[in-house]
Length: 113
Length: 113
Image (tube, rainbow over all chains, first blue to last red; front, side, top):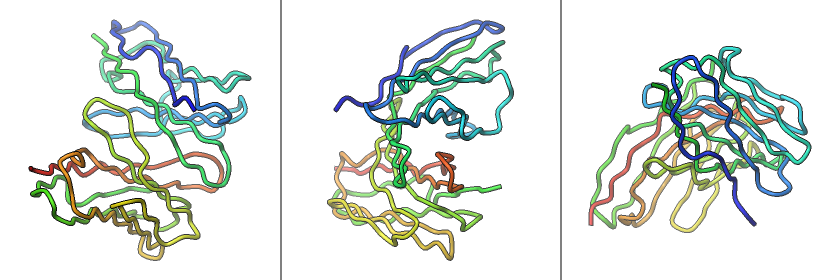
């Protein structure tokens, strides 16, 4: 079974631009969660999508948004990029069932200059 | 607000030692707990998942326990090997509806040959 894939793996953007990251979950998984990882704040939960609906949301500003498609693939968008948005963005896939075991992708390294 | 601490922050041991990593939650209302390892610059690899009704899980040389009453979990690694060198993170699911995990800051483990 293929694992979680994220594209692109690396990205360099300029402050003020916007960016879209993509995540393809494990086949059959309906839940996709997004996390931001920085050296200072560690891993922080952004939001979770399940069956195309946002089910949980972390404490991030509205510049961070996401969506999920009918094939469970998910995209995350960050508008008006700030230097502090530089981070490793990880997505996690889960069946959404009672076990809720998460499987992570390799991440997208975003650098904002 | 749920907060997670991990002790120690870093650990360096000679190969072959048994070791214990600790994880504590400020709120004992944890539904599931998952342990991960992360290699530098990479995504997270799931090690063990303990459901809320369980007290421990074992996989090979790894054993994880969960004491919900005290909000504590431990990860025991037996007969450590240099390949175990990584950062170990614990994560607790903080509500019973969907994926909303809170992560600890991690323990950086170095196993010396």
